[in-house]
Length: 160
Image 1 (cartoon, one colour):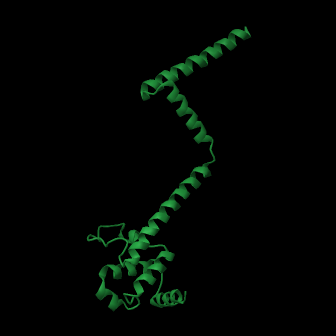
Image 2: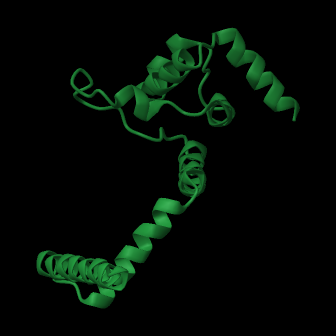
Image 3: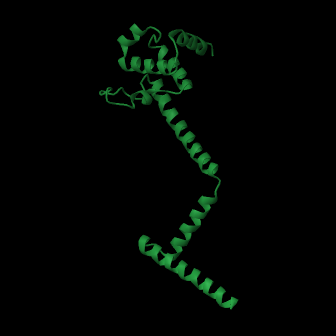
């Protein structure tokens, strides 16, 4: 009797698995092998340490940021702003965020621009290059800096 019950349970599981496989193949158009590989991949992902994926994603983002930083540096050296000001600034919600540089990169920018523009003299700067003027103001405000901070920063960088 017990052997019959075990056989029925086993048959039930086989029928259920076969039914799911048939349904999955119908819906996806995948082969049995592809379904099996997908199931294995899902099992691996579900049992992987969640931080592993987060750390990999973080490292990818850091690599991308490093690539972009070099591109931004080359523009700064050429006395360009990394992103041009938008003509429709009133409707461009991303304008401020697009123009904020990390503090270290902003410090480099001060070194590159200070030779051609008197950055701490807003009158002089606004008369020479409106894009640089706007870009500098956005970053000064973002980093809560003052013109004295800019002068100190430039003096510190020139010592090096």
